[in-house]
Amino acid sequence: MKTPACLLVGCIVLAGCERAKQDMYDQPRYKPFAASTLFADGASARTPPPGTQPRARGGLADSSAGRAGTAAVQADIAAEQAQTNPYPVDLRLLERGRDRYAIYCMPCHSPVGDGDGLVVRRGFPAPPTYHQERLRKAPDRHLYDVIANGYGVMVPYGDRIEPADRWAIVAFIRTLQLSQYVQADSLPPALKAQLDAQPGAAP
Image (cartoon, rainbow, N blue to C red):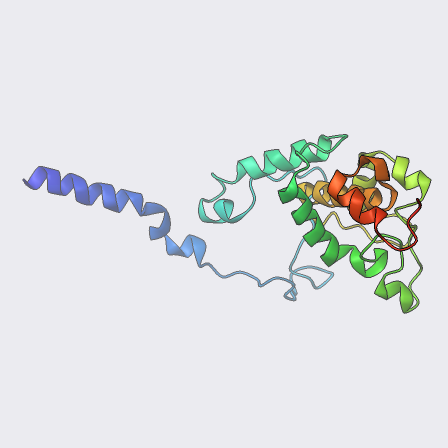
């Protein structure tokens, strides 16, 4: 009975080896944006060297010393290289896009995408409306690149909106555009009947 018990104890100990060396996890370190006298600019946070590529990211990477979390990086790379929306445009994607749009885009672009957001009403330069012909005909990749890299007075959002969410926002923008230019004959019969019943509807 001693041998099986020893093996069981050994397995439990080995399973906890990564966390046993707590000094590797709880070592002295700078907090984000803390000052430092070690560098000439006084900042502890350093810009990665040119060409640096992430190997892993997310909670799994943090808890596994980078062994897990590589799939998230590969998904980012695939989304970044896509020229058209690589995700199925379903309700889940549109809800995610609406959520991210409300956080990052709506203050300037407005709830309907006409460029009359609350920030604009307080004096910020108005962005172009999404409903102009140029942007309705623009490829998805153009909208994605503007989100990532900025355009005109719009700052880049690539550092705070991950690639998958950029495509979700693009899908939601297309929904806003469709909402203003949908053909009445393409509506389901019940919705078309409601539209025809509106006061002032064309006979």
